[in-house]
Length: 215
Image (cartoon, rainbow, N blue to C red; front, side, top):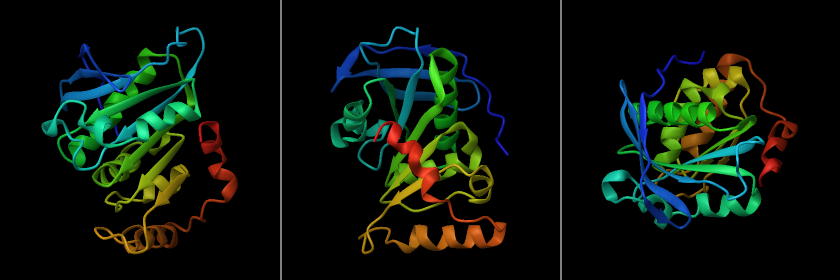
């Protein structure tokens, strides 16, 4: 079930643009602290039509204490996504680690954006690379119903898979068989175990077609 996470109380927008993203925006959450993030807003967006939302979580090297905008400067997920769908708002959070607080902050930020912009609820995507994939796996434990699909890249799964299996949120995992840090067993074995324990069936390919909205 989806955790109840309070809405933020205030947001301050920054004034620095990095690769098309506005930084350093800060969302103030009474229970989860300050959430720093970059925001890409297509020029065509005027609020009259619903747009997709893509939230991209960085790996080590893109965290907030490593520099404002370091995530966009070191990773291309957010910039490449613009080429797949011109009608998509892109958020690039900068957390300070890849644990539960960061996951809760990701959910809070996603809910804020959905609540304050005209977002198509059927096109809300999450991506996490390396440590960001670990954070994303915890997000999928907390609020899998919030997202249309999750792209999990070169990482491991830290969250409880049961809520994800019950929500049937499509997940696309990309991890090398001989990944020098994680290895593929870090995602293969937990997924197999979860589907066995819940009695759920593996997601059919048709469930992944939602990715075609922007990929």
